[in-house]
Image 1 (cartoon, each protein chain N blue to C red):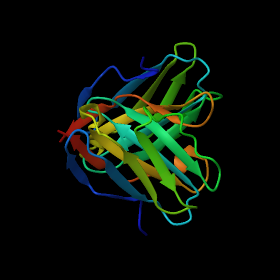
Image 2: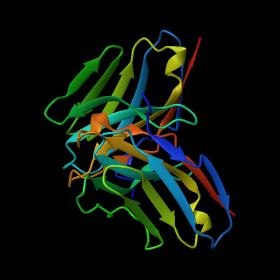
Image 3: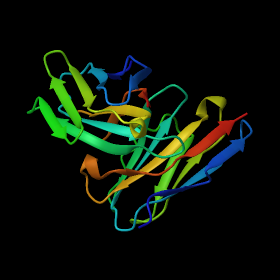
Length: 112
Length: 114
């Protein structure tokens, strides 16, 4: 069973517009979440994180929102740029705090 | 500076053979993780090393999988008697602390078991 779900395998957005990537989780005990970005033939790179004591964290063009009651988080990229085209993974720290549980990823394509 | 490196970048093997995958972490990083990503799936945690402590092997899918790390240096992931379902990209990551944000991933080894 997937504990972290990214239900949209792909998303296409025009340059300058907002990209919204969604992630749902099943375990209400998860309290720390991260987003990673991955280019082809490279390992994932850390993008932004959020703790369950917050509902929003912002870093430049990237904002992560957390809705604990809905067990849902989203990554907003504004404005989107062609260089943002990549696979985005949502991850949660497991209950034991020992490992990350990843979603399947969403491929974002930003067209110019 | 040098990032996390992994070798080989690609490996094709026949079912039943053993394979060994190598990870060179960033110098000074005490924590090292192995993950795998099967086609269409997210990354699955396999094993975690922290300094000289006993590794967390809770993610290893079967006893055909094992990993070693000497001190804070190179790690090897060994898969014995490979099966087709072992085909995946195997990713290594290292970090200087347990902080998840400082976890740097290598490019991965793409393993194909025929």
